[in-house]
Length: 316
Image 1: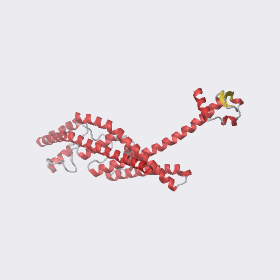
Image 2: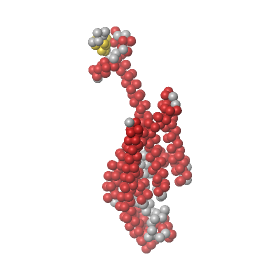
Image 3: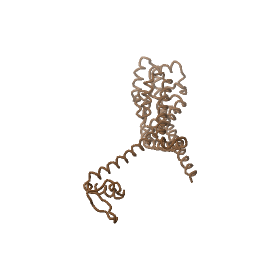
Image 4: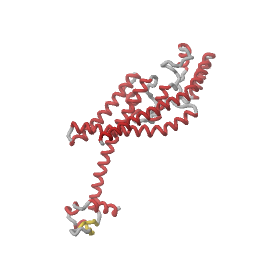
């Protein structure tokens, strides 16, 4: 039975992960298929105008960028560089100025799914905007449900490992230390990678890490999305970080619930002291009302829990 239970949990985790990845990839394909032709058409028009009259190019580019609500990476320098150096019949190069390539669409789908929303890429057409709303309504709860499933299973695996190597008196402290160490390692690694890739100082990279791990996504700094490899490791690393953060959240929830139970016991004791009357069982087994000031402390502590519950309900 235990093996069957473990197998069912493993299958549930794998299926949920694969279904979510497939949903994200299909959504990215739909976004790219809708937005890319429209964006390419606008880009080619801007290139044609720039070739005709270089003096009017900056105004055309500004109008096009405004039309795209700042979501396009078009700039006068980028278009001019492509005109002078590139063949415009092919947009498959790594420095493609078009925004809605498939890799960038995958990053957009993940930013919607994880509620990051950096704002570096935004849908323009009405169809994409409507599809983004439908995609977000379905994917956001599914993504965080998957995060919680993996976090719960991660705590089970971690507790099993700690039980095999440590005494029961120190298991809670070891678990807290391991989770804190994992989160610290993820933060430093994520910050270090972003520092080396973008050649920025450590504090700004830490700012980007904070915006990503908290899903705020301010938008002043964005991840690299120019290659499939960068998109893959960013999505994977961010998801692992969210799982560790969820594990820490579940641990804190356990501590707060334990604290709440202790506070409830103390409150019940104070209620017994401050309440004018209490239900005290007699030797015959029938309860009777008596004054607390006439009741010995030892007899108060011997009150059955069921009577305490009934007392709490009557007191409420």
